[in-house]
Amino acid sequence: MDYAWGIRGMDSRVARYALENHAIDHVDPDTPYAELWIGTHARGPSKLATGESLRDSIGGDLPFLFKVLSAGKALSIQAHPDKQTAKRLNKDQPESYGDANHKPEMAIALTPFEAMCGFRRLEEVAFLLKKHPEFANCISQEAKLAVFLASSPRSQKTALQKMFESFMSCPKELSERNLKFLLLRLQTEQSQMHPHPHDEPAWERKCSRAILRLAQQFPGDPGAMSPLFLNYMLIAPGESFFMAANEPHAYVAGEIIECMACSDNVVRAGLTPKFKDVDNLVSMLTYTMGGPSIETGAPMLGDPRILRYTPPVPEFEVMMIHIDPGDEMTLPHPGVPAVLLIVEGSGQVDHEVVRPGRTFYWPEGPLLLKVAESRRGPLKLALAHANMHIDNPTAVLRDQTGHSHLTNTECPPSPSPSAGTLPYMGLTPTRQRTPISSHHVKMEELQLGGVDTTLYLPDTD
Image (cartoon, rainbow, N blue to C red):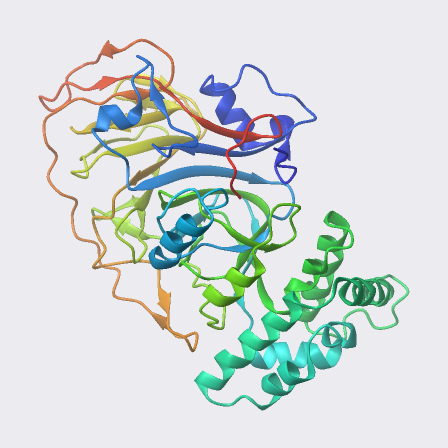
């Protein structure tokens, strides 16, 4: 399968990480490398260096799937089903929906990252319908009337659904013709010949340029008009957002760490040559308004070097750890199976020299992290495990009017560490390590099972 949205060659973090892990033997400069999977999902299971599967080592499945994504161009307009919908889709269409689990997910930016997430507020959609007649031509009169007249939260939700359903069911010939007219007009307005290039607000200009960019990546796909009804966001490195089930989104460009419930279910509707399940997508969406809350994590264990990213779901949470040259840290075990990814820099993990892309399975026991004073930059790590702070999330859920619900972000301590050993993910033999705080830590390299390129990829976006 062709994952043309990945970043090509060594410019892709996925390619560099996969090469470091020996998941691939070489990097083709012309091949897009899109996703790296860490976990026990059947489509891309990780293994220990001994050949034992990570699933067998744990004694079951991890409740989450940990990924690195390198997006060179937009992924499909999509949403992930809740558990009830996932069970139905898996039963009715097992060839397209291979498991019965939901797939809430959290993204943490490693580079500046662009994404479309959630529906715009209805007043913005109404304004854009008036400003862009080509977009309005793709919407039925009934749906436009609902958008312009909606006042209560319930009527606004109904209007959004009518607008989206009307756009997605617009005859192909009509939508393609109006897309051409829209592109011709926007190209003229955004060119240097435009007499007043700064007259329109920045968000409108950004929306127009996003349409031109998407149309260039997906010629003739009416999904290029999706910035007219989806929020277009730019996320800075270290910032994160949470996407609950049944929320529309499309990642556009950049690199992220992504953690989600262990599922591969994707319901697509545009910007993709793959199967588009428009009817199911239209019926399953919540039609909330406004984009997701952008979070920067909360300090953990009273230590600003550890930032906790906790969603309001039980399957996962992520810690981002930063250790400067000359520093060291003994990290207590969270009390549940965990995986660790070296994101940037080099240093020592329990006296083992590590580089970006190296990954660990951490079953129990404390872990010593250290960076020599002679190093020129910090060591950055990402740690994922089941959610131990679900009562104290850093991410938010929105109700159907788009309002956010967020508890305080004061961080309780992690569970006390327990004695045990730590396998490391890669291909080197198992070796016994130096004792740390009376705990012996063993590390085994892990073979990562899901490196998505145009040559081998699990069927997911």
